Length: 257
Figure 1 (tube, helix red, strand yellow):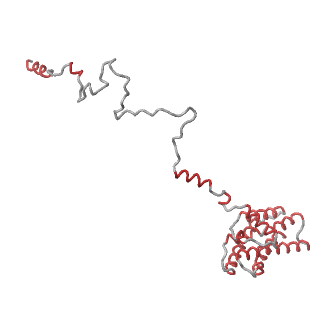
Figure 2 (spheres, one colour):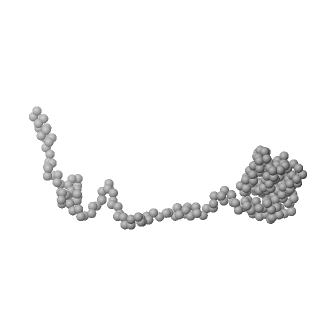
Figure 3 (spheres, rainbow, N blue to C red):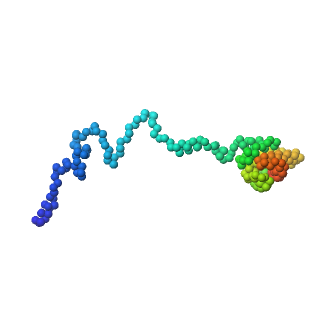
């Protein structure tokens, strides 16, 4: 037991004193630590220094006016370039290839067979007008009790393919399939007048035969005029008008019978 008492006495012996609490620990003295001062001796008029890495620095005071904030964000050069590019873009209909001015000019060219066609406009692959004219032709046939939408689109596709091959053999410059389909579709407009006339009257008499022949000649003359002006095929209008007359003759047979 005496050995155990000596062990406890030796264990609790230390050189630590209560007076050492007022001294700085871990290498910091009271002169270097401004926060280690008794209450009432700290100088609050001095600005507080945020030197600790865990504390946020103070924000700058707001110098603007109320309801009139200062502009602190300026768009970058790339953003300003994109905004200016959106303003310079063409309309959506022109990007889709739908130009109402050109559609109206092509329609007037078809309605006036003797008018000189503009080759630059007619060489465009505009399919908006032909689709409308094909739907209108099928709708007028439907008013007569003839459901012929399949025949209209089928004959149109076969006729465009045949004229495409023929014109590429006859012309020196060549032509695209879209241009051929566009021209043949626009020249279907007089055939709509024939089918509309067939809604009110019968086309199987002598008057109907004369009117049908005139409409076929109108369509083929307009189509051949546009083709020779767009492809610079001078002196070959009759050669181009003959296959066009055969194609529009099939549409006329659908309208009559």
